[in-house]
Length: 142
Image (cartoon, rainbow, N blue to C red; front, side):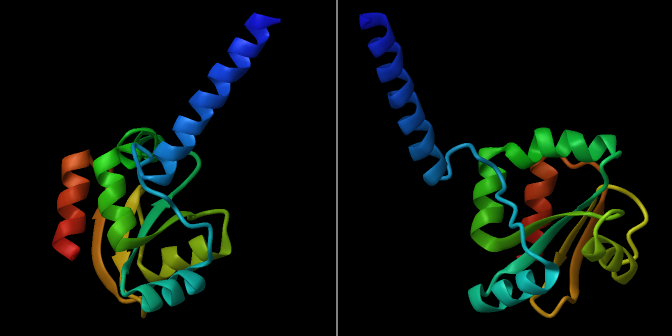
């Protein structure tokens, strides 16, 4: 019985620490909003932020690699979460994706877009990006 209580106590402490870390932005990377492009524009307008769009497809290897590495970096997350409304848009299967693909002439994946609250393109970058290159991309748009 003591073992069960000990394991339970350890699990509660570990979960509490993870929740605190997540709430403080520690190591979580980019937080992508699950809203439409229209709602993201409204949110950007209210907050004074630009919109960052990860234009990806399910079959794209470099897209998956960025999602698993660069987008999960703590420093990248802090920069993007503080300065952008972040969207991750599947370009072939969603209505927003199809429209954004046409609007911004997306021809390769991943394509990274930074747009203003009116939908005007500020910056565009194609292909896998390291932490350093993604940070430089964001800073150049700010």
